[in-house]
Every structure is written in structure tokens, then in C-alpha cells.
Image 1 (cartoon, rainbow, N blue to C red):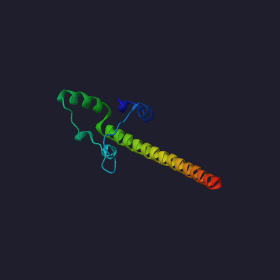
Image 2: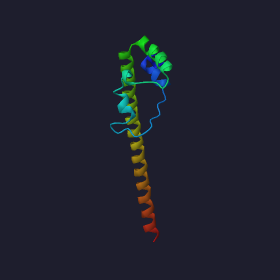
Image 3: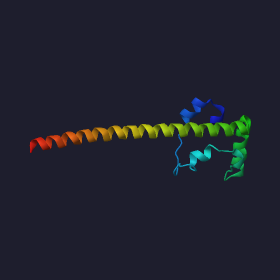
Image 4: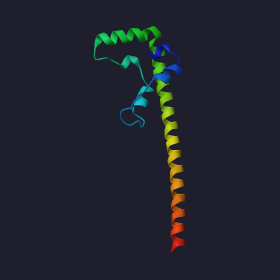
Length: 110
């Protein structure tokens, strides 16, 4: 369906759940090299139906849309990891600061 929508509309509607690790050869990396010619469906009838929809847009155009989606998801994942790492560092800094204050109070109490 996203083949008929603009990129922003499609990205808001896609919920991608990655199975497995994405370290160079994972799902997102494979989607970045997606080619509909290398795909198949369990049901040949379903495959024919899906290919008719894809052909309405064009297979090359569809491939590009899937690859672009994967690239955008990869960037979003990277930003999310960077944000998570940043939050972790803030927590650790805060924890270390609190820990130092507690140690100082313990020394004063002795």
C-alpha cells in the first residue's frame, strides 16, 4: 500500500519489527538491497496479485521505495540508540554525582 503514498505518509503507517540483530547483515541491511525480483510468496495466486499492485507503480520504483524506507528506519534506529546512550550517560553521571555526595556525607558522619 505504501507504494501509492508519499514517503511521510507511508513512514507514519509502517510499524517495522526487526527479528534478529542488525549488524551489517541484519534485516535493515537486507532491505537496503531489496529487489522484488528476488521475492516470492507461499501462494502463487497471492504473488500474482501482489505483483499486479507493484507493477502499477513499477518494480524499480517499488524497489527504491523499500530501500529508502529501510534507510530511513536505519537512521531512526541509530538516532534512537544515540538518544538512549545519551540518556544512559546522563543517568550514570547523575548516579555518580549522587554516589559521591553520599560518600562525602558518610565521611562527615564518621
